[in-house]
Length: 103
Image (tube, rainbow, N blue to C red; front, side):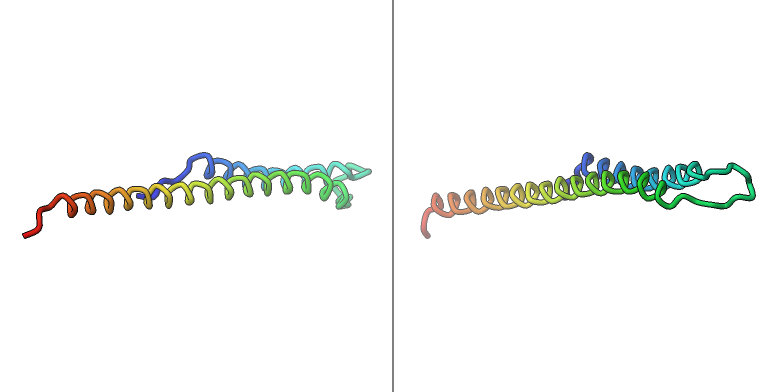
């Protein structure tokens, strides 16, 4: 029985949305950085694109990193729960063997 963590998945998908959203906003702000708004002027402000999108990419990666930490902690919790249930089975089997009369 593998228990998944909803918060870890949610943070992962939020991080992905932030990254893609910041890239889209970066393209939009790069187009706003043009000096002449003529449709024939195709200058794109790379500096505006990078400065707008790099912040979102960093924040998105932080969200993905936090989701990975939560996922790893959930795996540790699941393994400890499985070990404790195995130990209870072994302990009950040992008690049954101890209480069983010798033939």
